Length: 370
Ligand SMILES: *Cc1c(COP(=O)(O)O)cnc(C)c1O
Image (tube, rainbow, N blue to C red; front, top):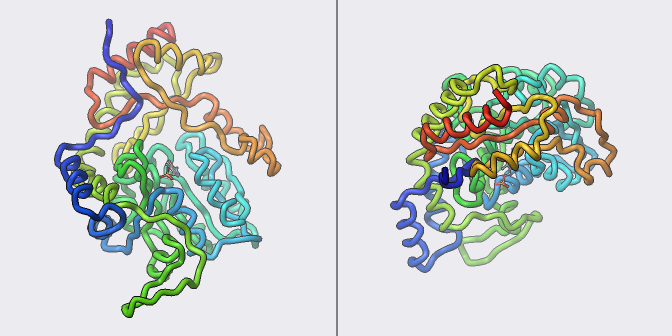
């Protein structure tokens, strides 16, 4: 049995997109240009005509959103400890202090029942994360943010294509940040987008994106703010434009594959499955928790030996050395710690075959001896 290696994810890029990238490369203009403008326009249309600016990473969009929200030294920002570390790193990057609220063990997202207890006079913003593409309850989130007059920066890195009450994530809300990293549901290889709220100056957003530079019609320029180097290239934007055509089909296929996992993973295996949400969730990842007593490292190695790739997303980030050095300890956020220590991400990507799901489920059942 020598089946090809099945990675936990793989981008789907069509030939038309590849040809268009080649056109950009031949055009003589390969950095930010017409493709960036076109991709921004396409994203804006997708997000209900809200202003959108694109960046070279999702991390950059989060950092710039914090700056646009006026978050800096002396402020605290509330987020989840079970996310890609970028979510918390950007808080430190702008000189603010991260405050973590443990997750709800069912949704694996920030526990909104505990959110209000963490809010103090120093709290300036909340960064909720839609882990695996399962949206945080937007109604409850914005009710709390509104009551305490806090900014929200939705880390929707994983929830492009997901929705809340029938509307795509990005069409409503305060700041909304997307990532187009290679593994995300829509990719530009590396990249990100920031949906701006109506009260935020998009010109300032553009200056924070590129060295603070403002250009004038007479050829002069000025720098009035410290900006970064966060612009997307036309090469990347061409990939994004090609991906936009498929996003609905990508999400639909991911939902089908997720449904198949639910059908094929027997309850007797003792795995803890994610919430079976086929309306809002875009199934960025299919994550199961291993039963107690199973050595995760050995389990992953055994699947790999059978040609099946598995990911870990993520260990609870407050236990990383950097965050321990800030005072965080084991035991601070028990749900995030338990889930971070037992979670595995099974293969799921649009080009996967139904038979691939069956292969993964059979391998898991054999390994768990059921
Ligand atoms: C991918 C990701 C990011 C960062 O995006 P990059 O484009 O890699 O910078 C931030 N937060 C979450 C939850 C992510 O999954």
